[in-house]
Image 1 (cartoon, rainbow, N blue to C red):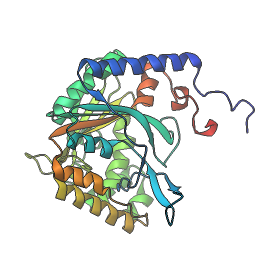
Image 2: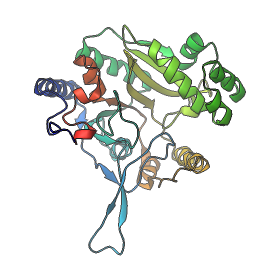
Image 3: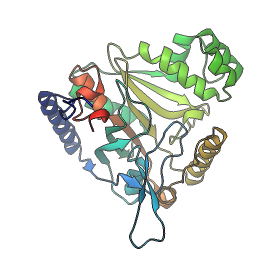
Image 4: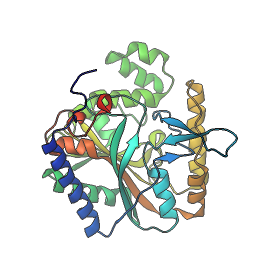
Length: 324
């Protein structure tokens, strides 16, 4: 172990600037009468998405017959939607989230998330509010908006909505992913690979870019478009090579949400991954009446990288993973 590992990975000056940015964010929401909330980091259930991996731990209650498995949240989404169902109104949260995944320039297993929900908003209205926040923090130009379909066709010459798995495999072969494509049976896995490697680096360079209308098969917790069943009312925000935010016009249909979770677990099982416990409290909250709303998760650390011209995430957090 290095002898200076006790030192913070971010400079004290950067940490002072970080605090100022957080103050600005809180003021932004206070002006709009959005309530700050705090929800648990530990939960009895977790996400089922096969692309997300949770940390788990054992709670040894002294009066329980056996240990109880708890999961560190990958985002506060489920708990915040339970608050919305209970009548909270517009809410936001700045909190730690945890993902048992990669580590690198843009990733740390423990990171800071800004998440907020706006009852009565659709995804287009929420994008306008996100844009106002980003312009305030970064002093950048107004974001552009493009559809997933159009930007994929522009940079890869293929329609991601109508192309078959065979078509996408041919495209993957063209870009050097022959071995991976040969064994892959999920079209979305290849779409996400191609998009991340050959579209994301080319968008949002001079000003932020919202990519909206993701394929319906990548809806996650978003509504399917009522005008085009091939797309979901989901968006992501990119700027200067960094994915900043992921947002939805939120699904409020309880049977549909439960079906999606069960389908996720079926995919996990087929991939040899652990089946995850479905959050029945969240399902019950939707059933009781999740209001029509839009929500977004935004990476605070990545936003700070852009605001402070830092190239690595460890430059804007107190102690990155190896120093934790």
